[in-house]
Image 1 (cartoon, rainbow, N blue to C red):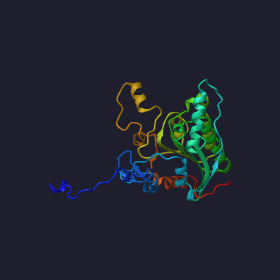
Image 2 (image 1 turned 90 degrees about the vertical axis):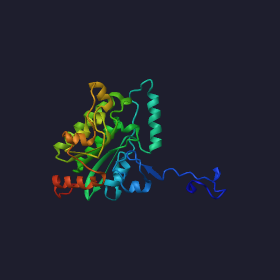
Image 3 (image 1 turned 120 degrees about the vertical axis):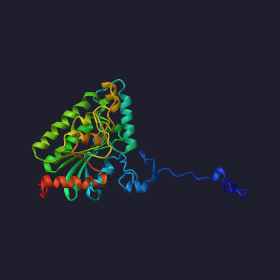
Image 4 (image 1 turned 90 degrees about the horizontal axis):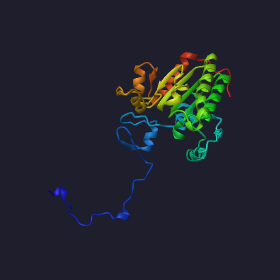
Length: 289
């Protein structure tokens, strides 16, 4: 029993001498619970090295991964949402919007920019889930539309990285109309014969799934991403039946023909570049800006 008996007295640590583990230095995987350093986690593109769980990241991180050397020119960075409906309780939305801008340092739920990806000119739009759940309001639709206009004007492939809870219902019909706007712009992109790659990440739901997210010339998803229109709970309550295992995961959608393939984050850049190489050959853009 000597293992469990303290032979020396006075080996204690006073409360005031105890040191807490500094916050922000460690990452605990939400799936396997394995702990790694934040530095190692970010170096691994925010993917758990133990189980491969893809943590949610925003546009800033995707741009650093996809654009060569992380260099790009942002489009319409200062565009902000107005208050066209003026509901009686709209002040709550306005206050939340301003607070989110202050907290995140961005002006809305999508960021757009252009640069080079493996030496090929591209335009990328990526959604920010930390901005009101990546909800699609009027600014999101307008910024995506203008990014597509830039693609058409300069003959650059368009890449959309979706991560959203769906339409921003605080903007009501103005939000829902963005589904039609973005879909119409993508039709113009198709008429110009410019490739469109859609990347669906966790989660991609609601009006985003029902519009631009599923309209790619090629639809790609990250492993384990939740993808659907209504959430699993709502679907189950509506149909009154249990759902299949893995329902609405990227793997389930791939099996049922809704996706072209699933790509780990580390392979995303090379796989998209290969697709563009096949569809465009080695022809460079007609012009650049």
